[in-house]
Structure formats: structure tokens, C-alpha cells
Image 1 (spheres, helix red, strand yellow):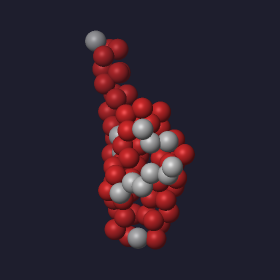
Image 2 (image 1 turned 90 degrees about the horizontal axis):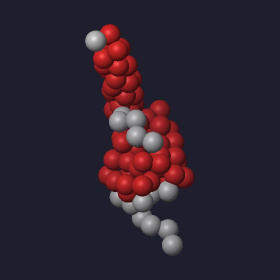
Image 3 (image 1 turned 180 degrees about the vertical axis):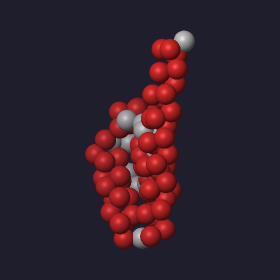
Image 4 (image 1 turned 30 degrees about the vertical axis):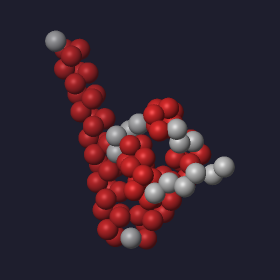
Length: 83
């Protein structure tokens, strides 16, 4: 039986994946949402972002945040290695 999720919940799941870099597997384990649903929501959000300037800014912010978090993690690893 298909389950109906609120748009807010879907955006939360997309943010976990896009902004925080969480994997589909970890989100599925925590929230019980299928990988296919997460993938579809991420695609839907990306498509909406291309049509709406407001959402595009939010999406760009999420992508930049993820990039900076990854860069920060790499720099921390380098510092730890050099110590």
C-alpha cells in the first residue's frame, strides 16, 4: 500500500541526502523510506529548482554546503595526519 508523505517530509529527506551527504541506505534505515522514493524526490526537487529561481538558490546553497563539509572533512584528516 503506497504511503503518502507530506512535502515538508520529502524536502527533509532530500536535504539529508543533498546537504548532509547522507546515503540512501542510512536514510532508509532511519526513516523507512524506500531508496526509489528518495531518488524520485531528489530528482523532483532538482527539476523544480531549474524552474523556480527561489528554489534554485536553496538548491545551490545545499550543494555548496555539502561541498564545504566534504572539504572541511578532508582538511581535518590532513591536519590529523600531520600531527
